[in-house]
Image 1 (cartoon, one colour):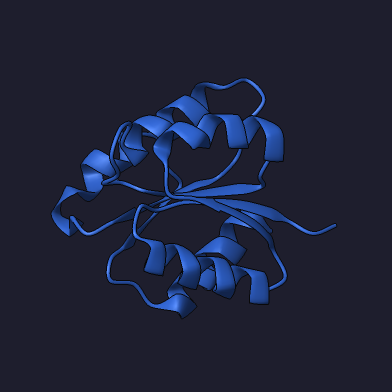
Image 2 (cartoon, one colour; image 1 turned 30 degrees about the vertical axis):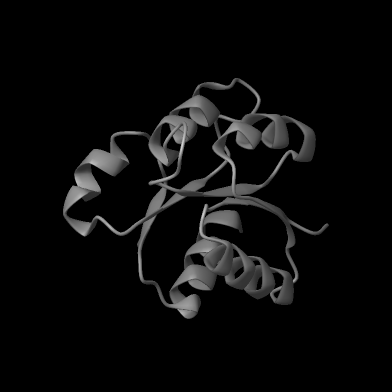
Length: 119
C-alpha cells in the first residue's frame, strides 16, 4: 500500500520541490501552504507522516504538531518539522515532533528521514 504524506510550507518553491521529490519516491503526497488546512487535511487524507514548516502564518508548525499528537486517531503519526532556526532544536522537540530538518536541507536527508520514520 502506498504511504501518504502531508506537507505544509508557505514557500511555494519548497512545497513544489518536496512534493515532487516524495512523489518520485512513490509516496502519495498532499501539500498545502496554509496552516488552517492542516487539521482538516489530516482528518480527510489520513497521512502516514506529516511534514510541517515551523514558521508559517497563522498556527505555527509546532502547535500543529502538538494538535496532531493530541488527536486520538493520529497521535502515532510521525511528524517532521522544517526549521531555519537550528539553535531552537530543543524547543521544537518539545512540541512532540519525531524529527527536525534544518533549512536549507538536502533532499537525500529528507528522503532518508521520511523512510526511517515511515517504514
